[in-house]
Structures are given as C-alpha cells and as structure tokens.
Length: 110
Image (cartoon, rainbow, N blue to C red):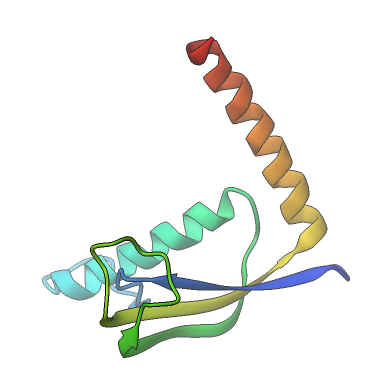
C-alpha cells in the first residue's frame, strides 16, 4: 500500500461472518461465507481492501445513528468490518468506474 491509506468501517445487518465453508450440508455457514465473499467482491470492484480488524458481531446495537431505513429502528444485530484501501488507487478506480457507468446509463436515459 502507498502513503495515502484510508480506513473504513462497514456496518451491515447481513451476517458476513467468514466461515471458510463453501460446500457441504452446513447451509448457514455456507451462506455466511457467501455473504462475506459478496462484500469482498463488491469492494474489490473499486479497491483492494486490506483487513484491519476481522468481522465483529454486535448484539443489540442501537441504530439511531445509522441510516438503515425506517423499518430498522431500535436495537439489532450488526456486523462490522474495518478495512483499509490505498486512497489514490481507490479514487482513480472509483472515478473511472463512475464515468464508465455514467456513459453507459446516458445511452438509455437520454
């Protein structure tokens, strides 16, 4: 990583526990792993995340500070993951991806 490192914390109501289970009868642990892989792949579209802290589970976390929508009020289970990205790389990829999507969408919206 370069000199310009940003650290982010992901908050989600989806169980993203990395279990390493990709096959077999344990569908819960397999689905948790799939959710984790989806997060990594989505972030990987614009950055190469480096783990700062592993996934943490927080039971009964109040959601007043979060914008999860009107349906999710009060206390809920929340999973968090802290990761770092190289800012210069992240911004370059994000801007490039945004311009590509904007060009693509303009074909349909105009």
